[in-house]
Length: 287
Image (cartoon, rainbow, N blue to C red; front, side, top):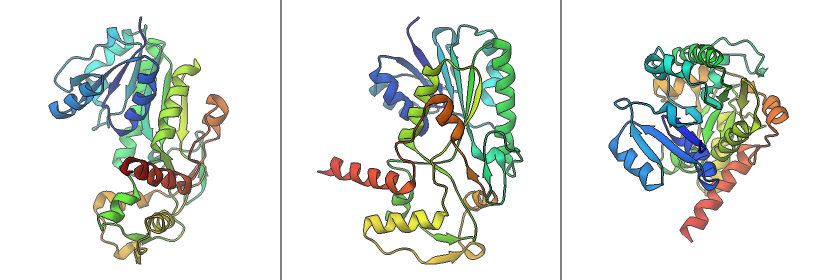
């Protein structure tokens, strides 16, 4: 069977893998929610399915990547759990989760063995979805690799966009740390995982340098050559409920396991190098 990836909920992170597999001659089937996005996928040489609304061709694929968010129950397993349990021909299932499943550790370091104590409802749903996929993959006898992703940034997504739109706030909450991961390093990790032949695993996917969010914003403003936004106390900041909720988790995430077991090394081990590369790429595109 030709190497074929079914990417369910094909979004920003999945595209990082798409770019790597397409150059290697893979076939990709991807689901999206809109006809417009389906047309964009088809233009890139991907077979697109609008889902929910169509069947998932599990019999025609060798690898599956799940990027959709659980809404209470995982939407893929809600409709297709029995078919995944029978899909013993699959060679790999990848599930994109979040470091939010660890909850709040008061700024301490966490790894894959740390206590999972999610604070937010969406993070609790992710942890439940992880367990559900582990059970299904075990019954099918298919390796499942769960990736707990830190905050994702990359081209078109990150502090530059907020600064340019005048929406950036340098929010100060003493002792707050966030971990991050560059778009390209996600693609590399997923590719190495597919090629690894390892049995089921959980991997943290983050760079080497957790940092306070205000430091990242300050550095991005300096790179753009614009004034650094003034400091705003967290309690007084004008934040949406979603943005404010991220501050309820405070931890620094370790990535030793994925380095050791997959040989992964981030191309952008800290936000300084990641942001500089994004800006340099923008300059090349504009020149």
